[in-house]
Image (cartoon, rainbow, N blue to C red; front, side, top):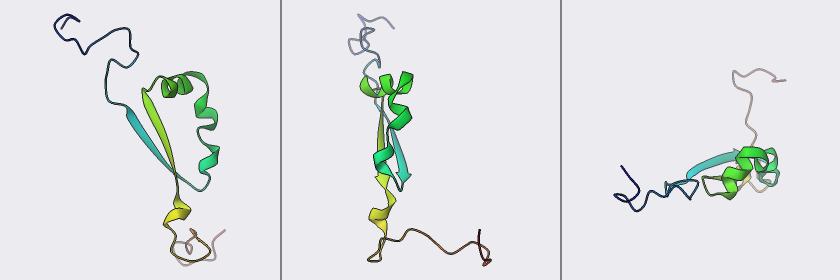
Length: 80
């Protein structure tokens, strides 16, 4: 398909008007993102709108007053 036949397909935009890839990262440390992902080609893709990084602080889903996210060891042993 040519650019004249499809006006939304433009070669001057890096993402060709495609939907943005949305990456959701579940983490205890949302302030560490984008971190190394903000540099190099991944950072350029973020700034160009090709993909988006959304860190989610899992402590926001904790139910106790201390916002505990740890669980007991699987298998019932002492753990590490």
